[in-house]
Length: 338
Image (tube, rainbow, N blue to C red; front, side, top):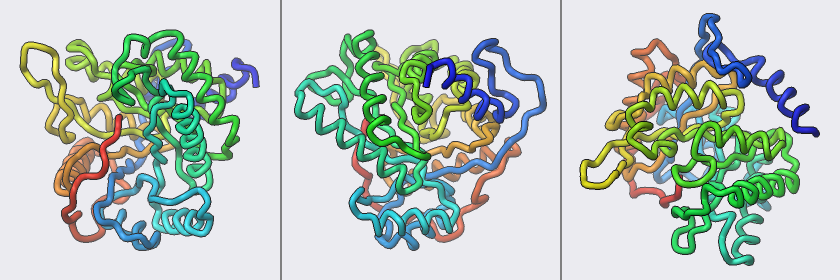
């Protein structure tokens, strides 16, 4: 499909339905019609979760989660895929994303090939299980850390490789409903809202979408202090294509060099009032996924804070409250990049 036709169709199909607060890509100005707000869906890891899909879906609702990370399931296990998809649909828990955290630009050709296949299978799994997207970082040219900084991570060479990989993954799967996304990063494409939009246009596939992680875009004092403007820009430019979002926060550790530290939502500087309001205005209701916390208690506190803030803003949550006992305790899930 020609790029112009794709963008026209996407705007008509999604941006045409987008509510007040979304911005025209052409004009850059917000609409003046009254805002409409939709119930928000939050999700996060389930510690010591049951293997049974029905019980696991119920557990999400008990925790107050209307969204979930994709449970562990192999692409070849069609029976479990059907069971997971059915159970989560019955309990109204949307599967937000299949994470495939590998380096698509690894220096070793064989590793790069394996990683590309792994992510391709992730998109196929997302499509089969009913997840909204498969997400990975675009990669890194770093030889020491799979998601580490490198001077070429912001280069045209990186951009072209990211475009090629996204096309290969999408064209191999030809997904019917799931989308493929690159997570935003502070030191690699897509590192700004405009960079994400540029990738969206260059990949030129309806199945390529946006994964929003505003904390990952904060890489300077200006963005830290003006993160409200950054959030507005993200939703103004990218709103119709956002399929899943991450929830965390940033604190500035005062030392002689710049050091931002991830903290629990509510303990940092991110303008969550703006984040929640703008997210609630998207009619396709992208879920907000908690991440990178060490304990179940921290996740419970983060969810409680966001629900309370949302209610103060007059926003609704789906479900409104946890439908069961507390989260319990466990160790942290495996670490990942974004």
